[in-house]
Amino acid sequence: MKSTALTLVALLLTAESLLGFAEVNDGELFLDTRVSALHDSNIVGSSLGESDFILSVDPTLRWQRERRGTIAASLGMNFNKYDEFGEYDSEDLHTDFSYSFPLTVGSPFSGGINLGYSEQTGVDYYVADRVSTENTNFSVNGRYQTGRRLAWRGELAYQDRNASNYSDTIDKSVEVGVELVELMRQVGVTADYRLRKLKSSGDVGVGRDYDNNSLSLGITGQLLPESQFKKLEAYASVSFQTVNADKAGLGGRDRDVLGYDGRLSWEATPTTNVNLIFQNDVENTIDDEPVESSSISLGVSKQFSRQATGSFNITSRDIGYFGSDRRNDSIGANFSLSYLLNRNWTAGFTLAYEDTDSNEAIFRYDRFTGGVFTNYRF
Image (cartoon, rainbow, N blue to C red; front, top):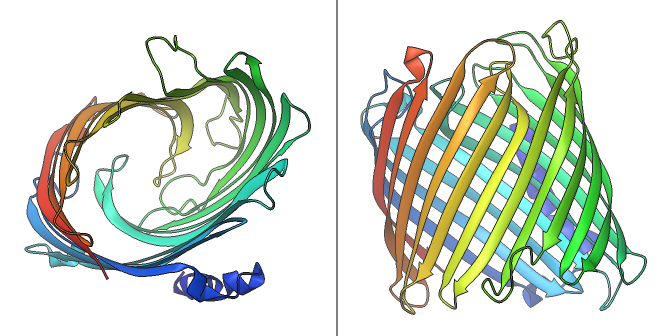
């Protein structure tokens, strides 16, 4: 996958000319360097977990330009050093490119392109282990408004995930849909069909190769009374999904799953934002287990002053395995505070706690992380 990373780096360097943006100096170019020191009480995420201190340095070069659309690119390397468990030391490359448009002002056609490559080292919730992964992703989406209240939309997505000592997966999906804009005052209606194909290598368990079909019906806009919830944006949908039992290696009958997805963003005050996210979907773990995963997350961000910003988030999730009676559930919370020391220099700290329960002993554990960070923009 290193060759993939080099290819994407080359794309970053040539993308502006491919899209007609040859004048690089018209864009904003800067270097972000983030340094953090973190204590992790459970570095593998299991009942056998050990604690350690981790020092991370992440210099990232970023470039952004706006003309007709927004084009942005970044390239960085995250260096992680462990105090006692040196076998987990890593140098994680990450790079991405995005382009969003309409092509002209007032154009009925809008959309975007995203591609990226990243190396990540962290706790994998499903296998109770610290895992290194290489992820390549690409997506393209578009929306065409044919009338004052009618729009058509679609998306193609591709993800290739390679996991050290576990199974690799290729995940492809295509989605098409229709949107009725402001059908009732500030509320719109959406209908989308998605075909998802997933294939895993089977390096650990039984290789999975299955299709996932879903039909989503949703509503978007000012769903709650505007008199009490001004500046509120919301979206909610339900999906009817079928997982092919034979292709998923389950045997017996196909599995039907009622999925849902929702997001709510509310500007409670000019300096306070509240976000609610909930979802239920089908996933495939790196040890070749199809699961039904549901979660709900509530977050609050607050700007205390021109310099100080804080955020708090609490998340609950529940995992059910298709091929066994294993269940996992967890609840976690995190808090962060950052302070702008000057125009280019930010510092702060983060705290997080997670408590996980399961009907298998190794997956019952708690985990506390806390640390400080600073970021300087050159």
